[in-house]
Length: 301
Image 1 (cartoon, rainbow, N blue to C red):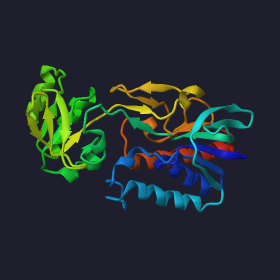
Image 2 (image 1 turned 90 degrees about the vertical axis):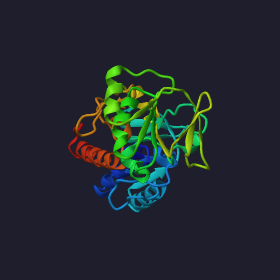
Image 3 (image 1 turned 45 degrees about the horizontal axis):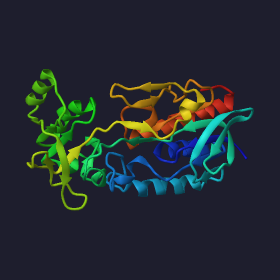
Image 4 (image 1 turned 60 degrees about the horizontal axis):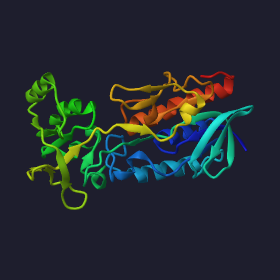
């Protein structure tokens, strides 16, 4: 079957786009693997009317509402490849099947590249977190830490004292004098020793064990981990990819979420440095408006 739009990714950006396209009476296919980036978190914050809600429950409600529109179809399968076709774009699924869309929206998301530190992965999204705006308030006034994992980390360490007393764990890395002085002005303690492992009951964090045996009490650890794109589909299609200041890739789009490949749009975390549900939903809506105009008027945007 040929669809007006095939959306690769059924999380917040993809579902927001699907809703608006459905309301424009366009046929939509959403391909989804059911593995959203924030599946490790039990609560999401900062999104109006859903502050503190389980992100998995939020997505389930969104999907149910979108599925109520008769022109929207879902396939729970990974998109393995895509190529231009005489009718638009042919998308090959992991199971070997193919589908065709007149336009294509890439919203397949990103994955965080976590450091291999014992005790970290099982606490990711709980007491080891990325975004202070999403999770910082819940740890207000407690002992906070920032792990040095990328060039972004020292910037993050200057911000986290807004939520509580902060230690910057160099983890055996280096820091230049200007950055060190800036952290000192912010009241941040710098710990140079490598981190051996994280400790605490269950997903809670009570401290980090430093190499040499010393334990630093800690309630939350912020890790601004670099990320990777969940698919190389944008690159295969010839879309421009940028590497941001912190070394992570983004798909290049214009203000209407169009890539530089005609008929291909992109939305959500794969297109920006700042990642929140609000941004993802807004990106999806913008992409949907651009796609509808392309379909209605035969233009790219």
